[in-house]
Image (cartoon, rainbow, N blue to C red; front, side, top):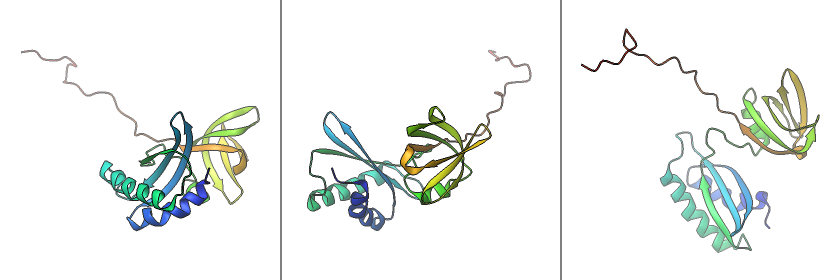
Length: 167
């Protein structure tokens, strides 16, 4: 299997040339072979037409370069509100944000952590969970996702009596 870094070097220039940011590449095994999920981003957001446009170009590129030696299914997606973090720069960009982290190796008896991403450097991140700061090396992290923060919703507004008028 080709590494994600090698795929990024093949796919990245094409995605960037189309005006998008290559957010990351996720590879998963599926009954039909390899699922290759490519996340793209843009300051104005991502629409289905953006995914179709990138899919056509990346699909043609992968075929021309013979970049994936096995059967694969290509999926192009936006990172979404609960975006997964792939690079040190992305971790640094989201310092101060709430995150969910799934660990490869349990830390302090826990495999899943939720807290605030406090720091990130080339080797590790610091996450604050329940007022305790935990340092995690990247080798121990399986996946990190941003936890979306939604505005609080107030109570539903009704008429002065709170009753529906039927006439």
